[in-house]
Length: 120
Image (tube, rainbow, N blue to C red; front, side, top):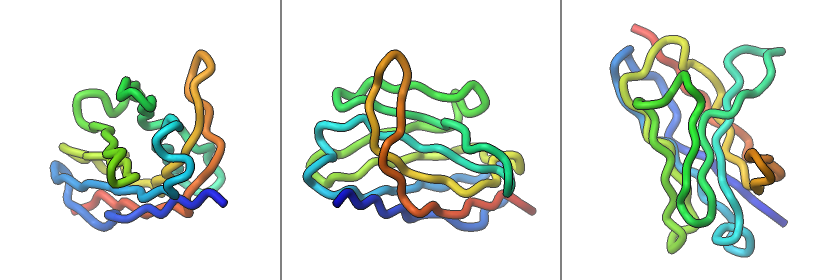
């Protein structure tokens, strides 16, 4: 059974920073690509924020390039999303996922999500 557990969400002022963490079950982590999606409003589709291959190659949504950084620690079975210079439009539920690359990143397993709210 694959388990992904996110943490680190919360309320932050515009311009602030947060780091999200996602702890993954050991049987899948080191072999899988990992990613973060977000849903900005109920009923809106989830969008890819960032993804990272098992070897550490990354890709980002244009809206977060230069502000967000995805990384992974295979020894700790954890993937991170460092979010800097946060904007109100970054408010969303953020979901960790494990997946694979086939041309682009494809999520397969999902965490339960963590709320990030950017507001003054």
